[in-house]
Figure: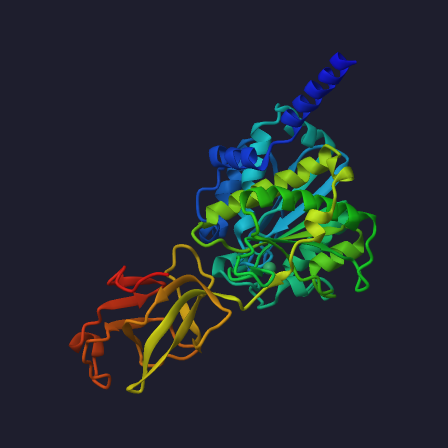
Amino acid sequence: MKINLLFLLVVLLYSSMSFAQSPKELAEIWEKEHISRLFPSDVRHKDLLTYLEDLRKLGLKVDEVGRSNADRSIHQVEFGRGPLKIFMWSQMHGDEPTATSALIDMLAYFQKNRRTDWIKKIEETVTIRAVPMLNPDGAEAYQRRNLQGIDINRDARDLRTPEARLLKKLRDDWSPAIGFNLHNQQALTTVGQTPKQAAISLLVVFGDEAKTLNEGQARNQRIAAAMAEALQQLIPGHIGRYDDEWTPTAFGDNFSAWGTPVILVETGALHGRDEMFLVKLNFVAFVTALQSIVTGREKTQDPAAYVSLPSNGSGGIVNYLFRRANIVNNGETTVGDIGVIAARRRASFSVSAKISAVGTLKGITGLDEYDASGFYVYQRFGKARPGELGEFYFYKLDRTVDWKSSDLAFKYPPDAIFSAGRFIKGAGLVPKK
Ligand SMILES: [Zn+2]
């Protein structure tokens, strides 16, 4: 009896080792094996074509399945020959690029390691079809909408865009059992009312306004729970649940209604981590989801890790917060806090930051906070108010400055200058909290 138990343990251990990589192991795999080279926000259509050529060379099936409004090619990559159909699409919003690179990395890794037991199991159990970068024109301009200025994700019913028509056709022709709708959310999205950034938020998308939990959605909740559990090991407390308001014109809601229950993955940001780290998180989340499906583990998974995720919050954090600054406006000085928010831009572009709030900012946390109490703070154009650029001159309080003088920075060189999200002069002078 004892020997049998021991044998069972060894078998269990072996099978868990060979068919379920830990989140940490998957992260290490991505570190070693990823083929995406650029920051996702810098990936243009031509770069995607290079990635797709890499996949083709590895032997993957890559097909052009449609064209964008500006006649850019849109591609579908296929892996596996199993009966369960899984459809994944990314970047239907042009400035939401993280998952595009993660899909490329995952498919390349699977194809290269088809002989490995756990990947062979994926290959035999499921067929994955992935459309990386559904909106190449939006990606080129780094904007949410397509070239017609239409939000493809509000075009699931009207089908006014070629990209939406293609997406619907790909679903209708194939009827996948599961869909993964891959997006990016605002970098300042928080987990509930905490000041923690939601680096990833998940949502199991219902197929009706009444939020009926059918079999597909219950399964997706268990899969999402497996994804959340894995991510909690890498970024504890930084996972949220996306708002599940029914949006009748959105694709996720309609896919679910049409019979392909969708899991929405929204990648945010994590302070101090770059975009490649987020690609890695996506890779771990996708592979975990697939493993939970092919091993059948999802059937016994407790959905709690998903269901109990705090909802996304907003408004609680800013990128930069200057506390107790002596703010100079029209020659008058008032003491207050200044909050500054950075816009979503390509990694290779300099940061564009705007003042979001001025005053006593209680309940707001800065990802970077400075104690500006020892300084006069002058907005570069003399307008320290919301909506203006977050560009500042800092003068020590013992300086005498004629605030009305033209060419202020020339006549009165600032002790420190904050520009494009960093101190370009006097770094370290204004104490960081
Ligand atoms: Zn989006």
